[in-house]
Image (tube, rainbow, N blue to C red; front, side):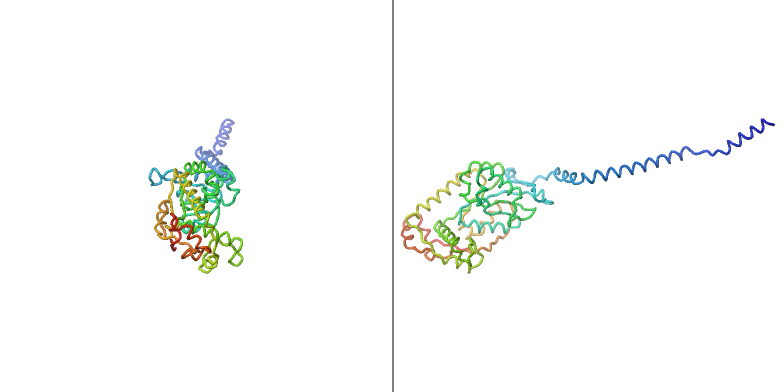
Length: 344
């Protein structure tokens, strides 16, 4: 009887204990592990993204290669992809840029010519940068300045946007160009800079412009303001009212000196990729501007300038001692300077 009771008690106890399924336990453990894993990963991702997202994106942009441009092999050294420090080229990062320099002399029409180039949506010519002496004090400062210009970090009124296709400057021959010509030629050929020579055929007209402009620096004929270039016929008429006196004795030697400097410049920079223009030719035949745009590999546009020519018509109306000048040049190779005229 006691044995039966003991057996009954054990059996009853065994029956009362519930049996849990191993599959359910495994599912619970797996779910717990997954929840913990997701939580830990989310915390790690937040920490990484807060400090590294920007660097990651930048690296992605830099490493992305630009497609090969569809150009002739000889053009490759002249095609560039600047990476400015002062702004992002954004969607134009892979748009090629050409580098150029306008080489000229004062009062040779370079200011007017540059306004024509800057009238193009994709061209930025940044003016006479090396008129500031400290920028041309030595070769190092010259190169530092050029690097800013060609890296699109030189900000001026001529600066366009991130999609600039040609960038350059205006550089006078007497602003360090001739003095450091060997190093500059090497720089141009290494960096792929193209040269636009712009000279004036009629050097007598250039001389009148130089003397008149020099006079106005002190006289300030336009309401006490000196202007090298004007945008209205009225202002041009006021400036043209001054008639300089030209030293007839030194006239021909001065003309020859300018010719010699021009000849040297062409010789020094003949190894560069270049084009030679004359102010009178561009003024009379605007198709010359098409050749310039082709030279710079930019889309052709009709280019305009607001500048107004100052000394128009016969030179006899602009020189105080006309008879002396006429006598000095008559019968010489420069006689044509006395009568040639052009309009723009």
